[in-house]
Length: 118
Length: 114
Image 1 (cartoon, each protein chain N blue to C red):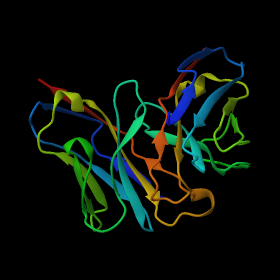
Image 2: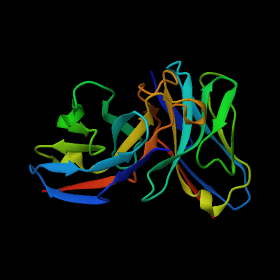
Image 3: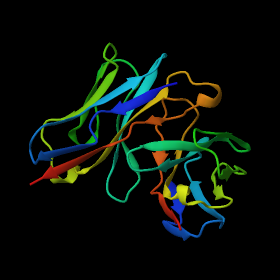
């Protein structure tokens, strides 16, 4: 079974500073990787995804993530954050070739709350 | 398109009461699922459906029932609510069961069981 660990439950940063949110996964088979953002009192919105190809993936709102297969990581980065980036961020994985009870199942990490201070 | 809609937004129940959380999507998506979100635990899959008439259990199915009579609707039923079911519930859908498809999430239902 696959699992996801987000290494930081909370990350406080100042506006215009860079930020990295860390995500490690465990799976015995190939996976697809996703980052979702949840703004206060809202649903989840897809930031970016890695399916195959270039290991550096660019998403919305200036975020990017790098897939590192050897370290089984998919860390999310932004070079300069804004107040509006304050939200909870979730890393998630899906088996690339799912079948049976694993069909399409998204496995989420515990979430990282990013708080951007002025 | 309205996307994925959920009703109600908030609900308070007493222990033992039953209720149905509604979920609908207007994107003709084949795959639909229900998650619950609890602090520090991320989202956990309750039930999912790969098409009308086909449902299956996720990782935390106990206490919940689902059915899928149409492509558009995927209601979640709590038969006898318990305080442990206090949570935020999200419905999601994607075009197909294929894992590369993005899942679209509804706005959530915040449920409190007293």
